[in-house]
Picture 1 (tube, rainbow, N blue to C red):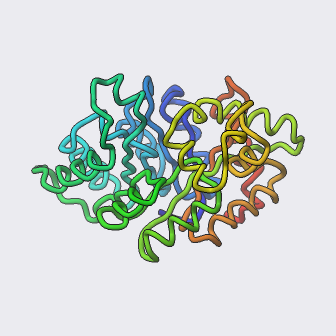
Picture 2: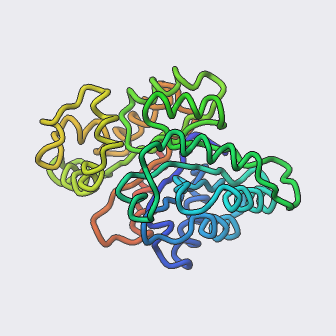
Length: 294
């Protein structure tokens, strides 16, 4: 994982392959260090998507941010990770998460004990018999950890964590729990827009779905947010803590706040109007690059 700043975006597993390849090359040339692919109902397979992006580029690392453990069994994940790590040495990062109850139960699984499910999944991955060439460097394994018990599991059973939609204070807590030697890679949503009405409008559009998910809401409560912050599309206080907006220098300050709090790497998610293309996302990344000193 080169550098300290990467790019996370849902369009990496939704846009046509030709657009994804072009964006990956452009982002690599700008100097960003990683690309992060999401997985959600209806998206492309993240491991196949990672292969497409890795094959199109030369240096940039690609991580799953985040692969759903309920979407495939542990042996399949172990095989996919080993395949990509061997084919692209040092460039694939395996990010795993327990997803959300509504998504998991719709697939016919029981979401009653997600922490136990993750622990068992890691056990099964470690014991999987994968008859493949051994990678020079196995892919780092990161967990989508928000609350202390999942952070502790990551400390004990993974190479680090990839938290999504968290305030800077979470980064400090995560570093305290996982210790100094594990990777800490928070995602940070950004809006390159100085007007507060337009910027917060985009941010609230982004947050609307996540405000329905208990995993995120309960985590935000740990940092002092209350029901009043979750109503009406989210209070300004909540919006500004989760989505940084403004000019490039303002956004760079938030990135450095995560780094100062203990992050090793920050994955930026540029928010653009609904219906935007990856080309418009990369335009925002061009604007940010000088202030980020890539």
